[in-house]
View 1 (cartoon, rainbow, N blue to C red):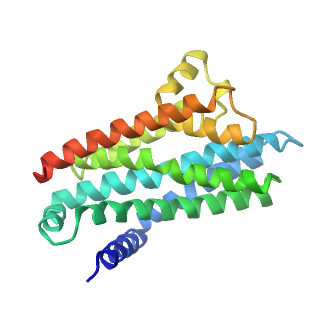
View 2: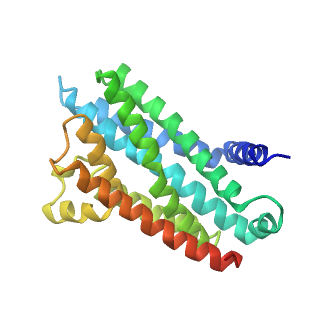
View 3: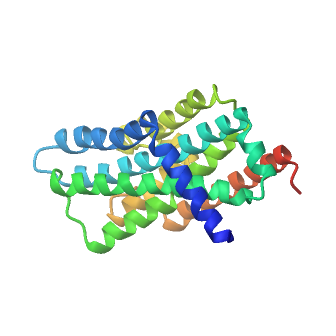
Length: 249
């Protein structure tokens, strides 16, 4: 069996395994769409499309974060507890195929969420963007999935299968709120606005809002640098813990 076939099969089986878990699939797909429909469309100020467009960006960020964090954290913690991760490590399958499969699953959910939110925004929110803005926002969101997947991987490698869901929620929900993803960031108290800078979700949302000229005005390079540094630090921590766990050199 070729290496490409191994990667393809592992990605497919991981996606099927997650898709057969309604307790994960339904909330992951429904929550961001329902929240956006209520707070971005139905409760939008009369005659305003700017609010719907602004909240489209922030709720899209909120939507792609969840599947990435939960898929990695919960499934890897569960695989560790049940011995599957050890078995896969001892098998001829490369460890990278296991991790890449989880990333593919996270991206697949991100694509579904983006398509649903964009459709709701265009049909019900009367959001009208240039083709380049739609495409640029979608690509940004897909790339922005990476740091949240790494957060999930870090939690999955360090937490038990019972602790992982609760800890992810304790991180995921406050991160979304403090980043201004549920409410426009300028509506938060000043000290909370300052705390937003510590979260990668804030910088991702600001890059998305910059595509629509609705951001807070900081330079693109600043947000990109912080996101890349965050991703690099998380990657280093995950590699260090993973190598200690597997005994790899």
